[in-house]
Amino acid sequence: MSAQATIASLYRRSLKLSLNWCVHRHLWRGQAMYIRSLFEANKDVKSPRQQRELFSETEKILEHWKHPDPYRPPTAPGGSKFERNLPPPNCDPPPPMVL
Image (cartoon, rainbow, N blue to C red; front, side):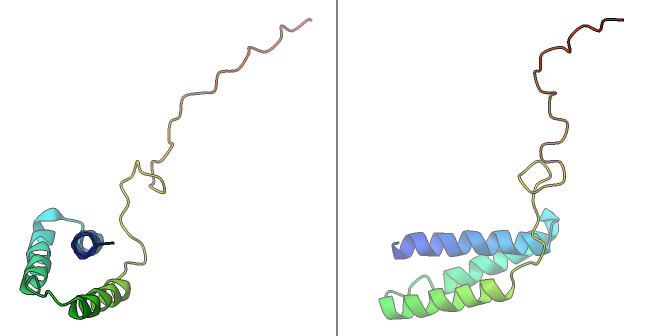
């Protein structure tokens, strides 16, 4: 994976992780701006060795702050409404009863 793709992946994971801890977007926006400033502060690092160190440090931080019960949209797999109100299965009607 290229450095640019790794940075994008780490940035996206950081934003999603912070959204797990703060569900309301108006409160989360400040955290998102702080995360952006951290990534912007290291955007001029060109040395592959320093980049790998930053990547591993970021991975450690993400693992440390991993939410024990991450937010899932209700209709997503694992959500509270996943597969709720499914249509009934198409079955043949029962045989007629003989009385």
